[in-house]
Image (cartoon, rainbow, N blue to C red; front, side):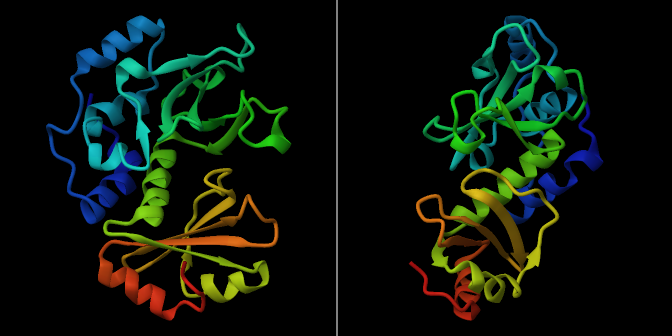
Length: 236
């Protein structure tokens, strides 16, 4: 299966600029997907198959802060069982506390929405919702996950700070807002910003409603330090 070029353009460009270019042998063998589908008794969405076949072996992309599950690890959430609230889990936080998947109601779509699994509430005030939509498409979710992790860890390192909500504008005005949805993770209302060689993540500190957490990661240490020097915050 040839990957949809337009669908994966941002992801492929990110890999080339921040890690290394995608190569022909970066994907998993197709028989691993066939076995996963037989075990799960379903057809994986087209975009998810493309991702595994294109780059499923890239540990530098998918086994850093969080990880893309191996085909043999893809599993189902069946709570409550036998309803459209069931889902397919394919991505997880490094410690397993948070996981992302596709609702069974959307599994037939080529590039389906991706949701945070809230069946065992991760976001307490939204406990009545089993799935919290993060992205309208799986391909967008994968790209956004790459950017979030680049902000948290960068290619070299990252820097953290906490600011008052009223001071956030003075920080973010030096960056361009990215046209990506706000996430419920790693903090509430997590938003992304970019500048040359740098990504920034801002979100409400879950430990204190009075502060906003700001994290930046650089493609190189030089680019990271240049951004730190011009931002009006005290870095942790």
